[in-house]
Length: 369
Image (cartoon, rainbow, N blue to C red; front, side, top):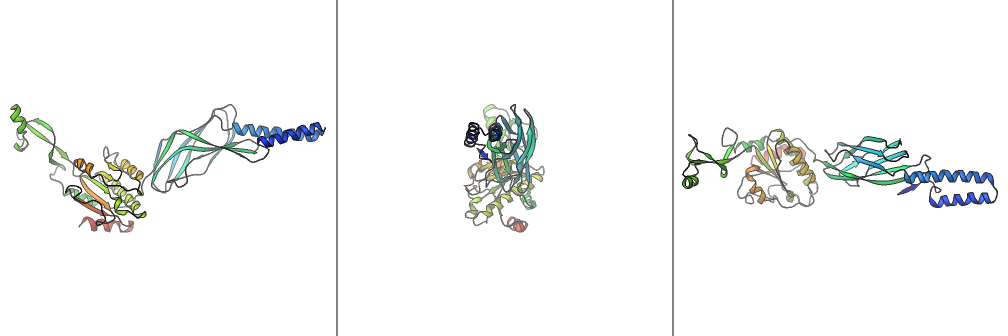
């Protein structure tokens, strides 16, 4: 797409100048012919220069993904390479980010005189506006001639797009009451308890093993004494259930509930609690405690609050031994779309999502019920 700043730096304008120059030569007006010819040549050079200025110009991004919080700025490493013989007199580059996205691009980067095969790199500042995910697939490049007569705009598609993840806004929360609920589930001083319904395998009998653990089935079949090895469960595990259905018809409260879930997940990670999320989009179980904060915050950033679905109760029950205790974040206990019946009687506590200033009071009030 070309933006000509002079009507003569166009095919039609060049044709008019050429015809006028020839006509002045035919009429024998030498001075006018010289002036028109000079103007024609300058405009022709400007037109050709502009048309080729963005040819073989490569724009790429160093990073495939950036992560930040609302109100902060992410810095995208951008590189430009002029792959042709002619220099680029001036160049403007801005990332192509749609209006209404969760991020806002910074000012256009402008450079002058990029020589043949020269590489330039800089950091483009991107301002995070709100929670969400944005994919940047191209940049808008602008250039022109050295006379300032013509300008051309051209989108340059990246070979590898940039994914920008804006985490939910975090605020201060107290998790002491949540952790106290976990300690109530401890059945031994070692910090783990045995689930009698889950078998991890068998091993040979050692003196001192409890007779309750003997595998009587193997004893009857093989005549050898083996003991059952039970699954160990860590009581410092919890699953935050984000019940967005309880906020239907309200756009502001769901976003606060998402921020509340993110704040609790981040704080629990700091306390060494293994935390999972049950979202309308599915169940999110971190690989380990180290990858937990980023994985949970990313899942919350990707969540579509305007299309709330049902909580995956079936999968939660299947993974119950990995999830620990269930805490449901809802608009209120009465409006919650899930209760202990949906979890086959598993203990369930509610965290009511209200204003930030009332958060500590609400947590204490609800968790002590």
